[in-house]
Image: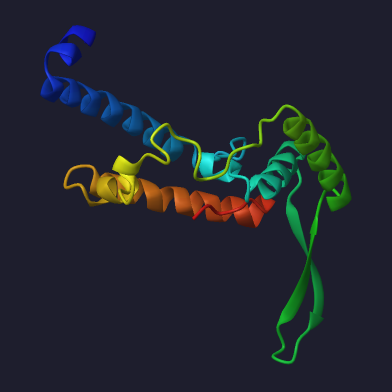
Length: 171
């Protein structure tokens, strides 16, 4: 493969296309197969961006601790509907304490230094300014339709996990 990629840019790009397409297909297949598995918490890289990390850590801890949001019946409101008070199985102060401990350790190891703009090697390069790889892929005639379906599936999974564990829903 390396020889082919070195000899022809076009052939190298075709090989990379096939490799990347296969990798994405496997990821989507796994997400579909595991989408209703209560023993699996699906997280994306966006969950670990600086602005989401605290909420992601809390949701992960709720998942690991087996905490679910439970509804307790309340009084009827003016429309005759019952209002509900939501509460976590595991007290939130336990989750918060553990999240602070873990995040403190990660910050000490300088793991939490990045945000959404500094993660890729092409970030900040003038020749890539204004180019959205995501938009290009979603509009691609072959890649676009299945990627849009995969994105919709992940959104539904992330929304359900938000309801169940308070996980953030990435943009």
